[in-house]
Image (cartoon, rainbow, N blue to C red):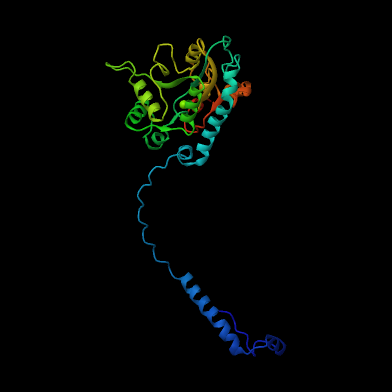
Length: 298
Ligand SMILES: [Mg+2]
């Protein structure tokens, strides 16, 4: 307990310097003294056991931030619009230049009609709502069923650009790695679903311009095979996609013909840098942090 200053325990000079009476001091200090006393008691008493906290129900799994970003952010939409605005600005010049091709090894470009090759998922339509809801692990069948039972969500700017390109006389092709999985009635039921998805997103498509993986034996997930086939009859003026494999061959961990070696993080970065002149200049990338061939390379 603090000792109160009184006339008895202070010398006269100290007492005078305080300029107040002991009574006044007590009036000021009493609340503090009482508080200190109580606090001291409380510290000495044994604290009662806290009641057990109620067990919170398990929180619902929250989608990871890459999915939330695509689903919720305006920045995602802005980047998609940026890609399609860049392509819109470049289109007329690339149509007009008879030697321009967005395929580095296309040597027959002169005189051929112009075409653009689009990927489908996360390029023209987004499956982010599926990504946010599906139970892992991912399977193509789950995505098929979801695509067949829901209305496709267009990527911002995509349908408008496809219309613009077609209006300018450009042929468009949809080269997707959605695989054909034949059943007894249909060699590729997934193709109809893909065509429906594109149509729902405001993009006219049919069997003549949709090219699925496995639709022919040589159409592996390595898209170069299908790009080269289109390039036999068209000058490919633009490539538009969300995965490095939509632009550059041999970007996958597991190689498919004509690739003989698996890609690595290092080889992908090297190839990307080697083609620096094409990015935003014939090659237009849509943002997709959720999935892609980048996730399996080391
Ligand atoms: Mg894609």
